[in-house]
Image (cartoon, rainbow, N blue to C red; front, side):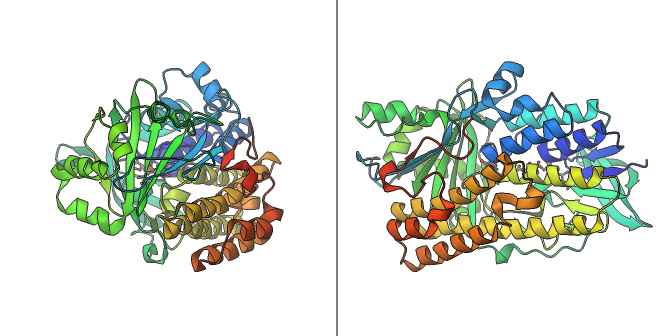
Length: 492
Ligand SMILES: Cc1cc2nc3c(=O)[nH]c(=O)nc-3n(C[C@H](O)[C@H](O)[C@H](O)COP(=O)(O)OP(=O)(O)OC[C@H]3O[C@@H](n4cnc5c(N)ncnc54)[C@H](O)[C@@H]3O)c2cc1C
């Protein structure tokens, strides 16, 4: 079995890359240990992801992909493909033992729009549906997809990669099969299927962010907007309803996400320091529902919100999320960005970063002549980008539970997203500007300096506003906005 490319992992990034390459005439093999449809976490998309998706659809002439770049076109074209509306990012500050309270000046909240209309809105992806859809499209385009297969060995032989794999049968595996190709792409996420064979070193301990998550899918999650309206607080519904957004409930040491899909289904997860999550893990999976209930009882407004909720599947726990390998590309191999490294769910970088890898690897693999320098540069850029995301995200955790400083730290992150989205809007690619504007040296220096001030306790909103004015085209540091932002860089 000889192919042009072997892709390990048939989740959305592996499948989308396989679809693009197969549609452009490459012989592609995809091997995954799982089978679609299956649960996957990582559901909240972003405007950057939408822009990359739209660009991929246009560049590779995939009209069936384009509708996924907007909530409105998704609903019109694929009404049965699970999706939630995400008008923006919302943050609410909770104190243990107290009900959530806001002020007319929004002292305890932050709402940042991702889009100006429902039709142009960003989305939450029901991954079991989306990943299966993309995998099926890759097969239709000609990719050979082998699900339910364990990778047994990966070897380098005369300018080609040879992969041996075997179908899982009951508790064992079936007869081994093998395939070879000049290119091996690892899209197995935390599975890191190729890391050992490629001699990767773990750089996990170089990352500042160290959190874990307890999560699940639930029915019966209450409406945060209605709960607050009933309590006389209208601060959650402007410039968009928070039920139509990614909700971040900021807590001591971490936060809770709530993302709504259709049919009363919601994704809910709690992020806490790794030490706390390791303690939760020690009780075994059977104890997780008890952990969940006890945790909720600490925050009365969240307990109210989730009082009628029921998990539709067993809760999942990942005690440590942040991870990073030493390389993301080399002789004939590359890792997708979120296989090379991933920091944390805070601010939703994973889907967009993974798609930016699809964008870059597709261009490199489909080029008329192979760009060896570009291939190496891709890997170095991805490792650097994970470190950049880590720098911005870890700042937010470092200042919790001080919500004023958390908002400032989040604003540093949003300034980077605004710069990146504007770049995409001008036709720049991730190769030219880096993910999250990582190659924008002046921006990066300014945000790194602001980070140091924030962590040193010297930063005030006024000081940051003056310092960062050249990088704040939408006024994210303007006090007159009172923590409500209806317009960001790429209004749709
Ligand atoms: C708790 C949590 C919450 C998150 N929330 C968000 C969010 O809200 N927004 C966001 O943008 N990102 C989020 N992320 C990140 C997001 O999950 C990832 O970016 C995304 O899943 C990456 O997709 P992928 O297609 O690259 O790989 P994955 O989704 O990780 O899929 C890997 C695939 O490889 C297969 N596989 C694994 N090991 C092997 C092996 N050895 N052999 C063969 N196949 C294998 C698996 O079966 C799977 O199909 C979150 C991550 C975590 C951990």
